[in-house]
Image 1 (cartoon, helix red, strand yellow):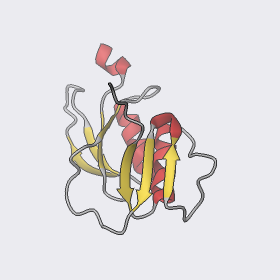
Image 2 (cartoon, rainbow, N blue to C red; image 1 turned 90 degrees about the vertical axis):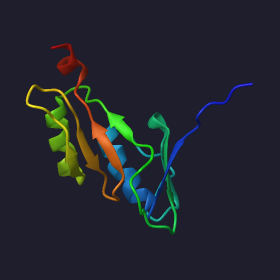
Image 3 (tube, rainbow, N blue to C red; image 1 turned 45 degrees about the vertical axis):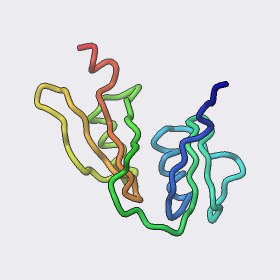
Image 4 (cartoon, one colour; image 1 turned 120 degrees about the vertical axis):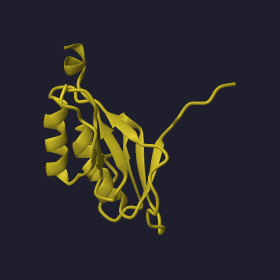
Length: 122
């Protein structure tokens, strides 16, 4: 018998607001039924489910997402995400073009932005 991951669930203070941020990050829509104030928001194409919980985030994430830009460079993607409301937590980019940037979403959940496939091929 096997199992599959149905969703990756992110506990948060405001499911719709955080789901909307990630919807913009991934350029994928929230589920048609999701509205402001709903306790859950789902990005189906990504399998990301945001659930409103009463507990505040208190420590560093044990699991995080690594993003790889598809149609822009890593640095262009970092700038786009900062404009959407992310914050730079740790800049691990190197002068030789390698490395990554650690960002946090509006609720403080860390994620990384790696080099694009085109940048890795150089």
